[in-house]
Length: 486
Ligand code: BG6
Figure 1 (cartoon, helix red, strand yellow):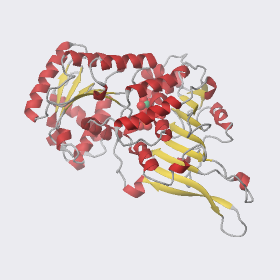
Figure 2 (cartoon, rainbow, N blue to C red; figure 1 turned 90 degrees about the vertical axis):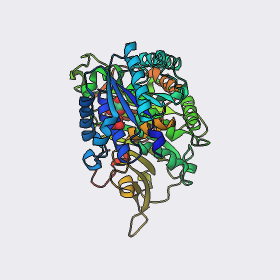
Figure 3 (tube, rainbow, N blue to C red; figure 1 turned 45 degrees about the vertical axis):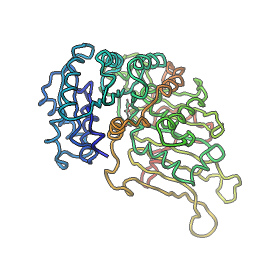
Figure 4 (cartoon, rainbow, N blue to C red; figure 1 turned 30 degrees about the horizontal axis):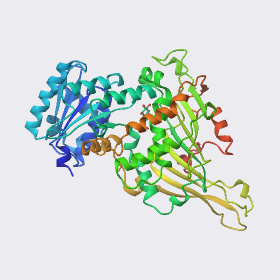
């Protein structure tokens, strides 16, 4: 690996922005430090801000220094690598920008033997996605004689079903679906990809992974941060567009899908799409929305805003495997802790044999996506001593213990590498994204969010949603000695 993948030019639109500085360029740097990219690669940053090549590189270095997994001081690569980065100032809707870009690409293709492989990365506000795609088409940069051209589109991809369809249509008028890579950075997380390995490389879990043994599934993506400087965007979006339509539904599809016939982008995405088809259209009673106290005082938030910063949603997947098993999804800002986990709760034993059996905790399999990447299986053992009293115990696997500190790459490292390799497995397909919008659409207007305290676990009312199941929200990843949050 290495040489061929690096023989390309990445064009980052929005190169002066946060995403490029904090994620994309640090990711490229760490990949290079790990030897996965070579000096064949060229990166052209396009944006409206004023930069020289030199000041652009300094700006990027600050991001690498602060955010890269591989520290530049240790890896000592930037001095040689910085030369690969150049800047092109221009307006995104001005054909002149694309004329100059085409010329720059031609020069770099010749100079660095990049074989006319071009990856266009849209790290810009969504309103200009389609314009940029069309301008690339007009400049004939959407097709390459000798190499490939691909376009990476960031999230949010649309703000409802109609806008997502419209965006797909406009992009498809210029690029074929095989050339389009829609980002959901959760798919770039190793612990999310591990769902596939865990489920399909082991014989012992899959037989239990169905309605016969699982009583319900909880998918939690709790965040402690407030909306902060993204308030302007967030107040239009809210948690359902920002987190559910993409990240939470992706976690749901990977948990619920059937084994794909092979590990190819199409086979994998076909199975995820089947799950989305099988999800029963949720009703308003399946949703509880909340808003943290103080949200209305945030800068750029409408003082009368009804935007939810928290949501809890019950979904059912109507197929043979999952009929009748509720999937509870929740996510919110300003909650007590940041935790992303998928917890499968097993059914209770059919016959109660032991004293105190009524209070037996059900078995749980908890997949901790972040920040303490791990997997826990909880079960009962005999309490030592007289009698036959059960006591809870845990089997655990932790990434740090097994693979060491820092073994997990950042999501964008994997996604950029796959984009260069042309592997679309971890990118969202057009039909998938539209189906996800179709599912969320009826819920988007639910107003009157319940208030909740910052630093809590969300509004009380969210408990009501899950109580019917005879249980409560539970974060298994926090079940460590000394940790009594839930
Ligand atoms: C982004 C959302 O897609 O994901 C943010 O727009 C959210 O609001 C973020 O904070 C969470 O990502 P992660 O990787 O920190 O869980």
